[in-house]
Amino acid sequence: MVDLVKIRKKKAKEKEEAEARAQATAAETPAPPAPVETPRAEEKAPAPSAEALAPPSAAPVSEATPAQINKLDRFKQEAGKRRASQSIQQEQAAENLLELLTFVIAGEQYAVDIERIVEIVTPRPVTRIPNADSSVVGIISLRGTIVTLVDVRRKLRHPQAGEGTAETRIVVIDFRHEIVGFIVDRVLRVVKTAAASIEAHPVVHTTELDDSIRGVFRAGGALTILLDLDKLLDHNALAARTA
Image (cartoon, rainbow, N blue to C red):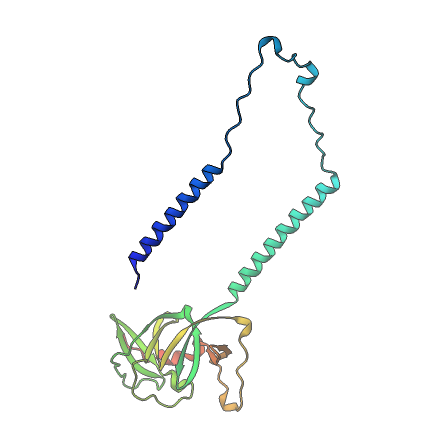
């Protein structure tokens, strides 16, 4: 707890000490020198000569040599080139930087490009579509817009999902001018990674070959699989969409 009384006493003491120091300094200041008497007219010094009144000649200004001028020009040109090169490198690095949404499905960590994502919503009632393709879970209404839910778990060879949890989300994306969604167990975060850091997906068995996987990279210390949405959500998923 702050003691205001002690603070006030401390400030008053500091003020008294400052005033005492100021008085001591004033006492030690020497007295001003006595005024000098002005000589009478008859005792005035003779007028200075014209040579004494002439202003001193200015020191000669050294001029830069041609070699120095050329060296300065070269330095300016090289500095400009370096700045331009650094700017180009920064722009290229920004263009090669991927911004990805990471999420979890069946214990595996995945990522997709956020440019395709429309929004992320909580689960809502799903309407089943008779005779729909096996890759379609059903449809939902999102503020009056029909969204087709695609079974991404099946495409990625994961078992059927059980009951949803408080962390279950629907990722809604723009797929070929259609609004499509897929269910994930948990959304993690948005990460940035260099395109050069994406490595080929390590395949142990031929059954693991999947053209919907662009590669893998490290995010938060975990191996993350980068998905290709265009191949993951093929046209068959939209064939049964109803108006």
